[in-house]
Amino acid sequence: MKIYNTMSRSKEEFVPIKPGKVKLYACGPTVYNYFHIGNARAFLFFDVVRRYFEFRGMEVTYVQNITDIDDKIIAQAIEEGIPFSEVAAKYTFAFLEDAKRLGLKAPHFQPRATGVMPEIIALIHALQKSGHAYEADGDVYFATASISQYGSLSGKKVEEQLAGARVAENTKKRNAADFTLWKRAKAGEPEWDSPWGKGRPGWHSECVVMSRQYLGETFDIHGGGVDLVFPHHENEQAQAYALTGKPLANYWMHNGFLNIEGEKMSKSLNNFFTAREILAEYDAEVIRFFFLSKHYRSPIDFNRELIAESARALKNFHAAFKSVDFLQVQDSPSIGGYESAEREFNEAMDDDFNTAKAIAVLFELAHQAKSAELPMPERIAAAHMLYHLGGALGFFQSLEEPAQDINHLTEDLINLIISYRVSARTEKNWALSDKIRDDLKALGVILSDTKEGCTWTVET
Ligand code: AMP
Ligand code: ZN
Image (tube, rainbow, N blue to C red; front, side, top):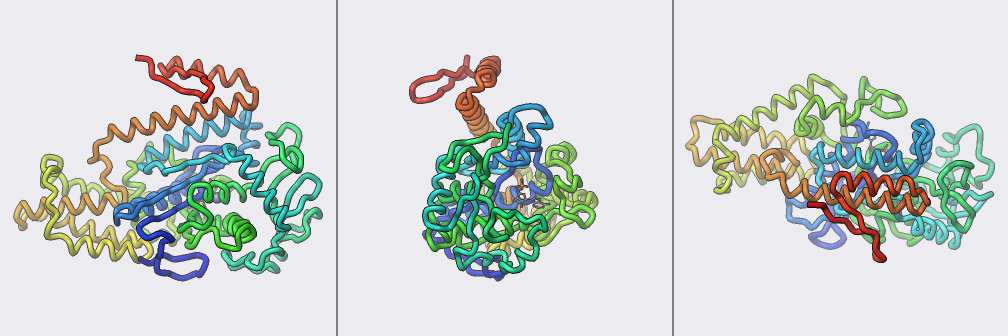
């Protein structure tokens, strides 16, 4: 299998660290607002990466973080007139709901930055002790000149970064390319105790901590949108090199942008549609098809005509299932005779996730399933293969049994709500902590605080 590695700027043979296992990390959302359909492209693509490896029989560990402390969250808290932790809680729930609606499989681990604060502080401290970071007036910076590899991921030379540096230079830095690891607290902002006084971490350390915690010192694949190559991923990789001399990940994968009228869809340009809005208009499966019909590294323009085309294509697939009464014949998974379709599909996907080519195989199968000229058992076999291969891309979830997954999500959501109550109690925000307990009770979820932590039961 070949993967385009941003690090080498070429397609490379994928060799996992441990045969048969894939350790995958993709940067998750910053929870200060509903996520937009451009973010959805990134989340959806890495969902497909995970699904395809699983489809090929690999054991995947997929970690996606949630950034729940950040300047933008603080700004939103001021705007909404609520504590920052409530902004983070509100949009974390919204993210999980929308991710579920989008048909994303829950990652194996979904840690939050505020949940690993001691580990982040320890990492920055280790960087400082080994001479890769320095303190200046309560802030801590990474010394980019202290490692030879800086710039290797993004291909940016340190001089270029200097040229691009802001005119109003931060005089506390030794080098314009140095980046912030820890920010000294400002009045009214959330803060944590640290060896450098009260403050909070910059964005780049949290992903190093959370990825290594679940996946090990060097793992297989690190992903995100192409806007993250520099500075975020360059700066993550820099910290790993400084700590161990080894890369953080062996393969760096980046999806292209969803554009709108030729420009990147982004919150700051205010040219976005939230995933929530779009999912009210179109089926999640249509959006999935729309994204996967193009190669993940190519930019895609948000285009309603193309979305309508995706809807038509999916109708065609569902018509194929209907034509053989698929739901009635599910118990006889005879997919023999179509092995060559599976081979072709795998070949496309093995070539750096060429989903567009893989979808062409699905079209051919749908055509065969509907073909009146073929004998029925053959058509049924084509429909089974269509279902089998489509599943590797996350299609046809409506034909699956939903019950189990929803139970899982409910449990995850309750545990998440409880973790926010724990944060509220740590902040001595008793009013919020009580409100969470009472609101859950009103829904029939009873919390009990024990020495071991908070447990819950559902009132019957
Ligand atoms: P953020 O919440 O801004 O950190 O973004 C979450 C993910 O969405 C990251 O992987 C970004 O690279 C990705 N992303 C942001 N905007 C777009 C876009 N317009 N198209 C594709 N991916 C994007
Ligand atoms: Zn990240």
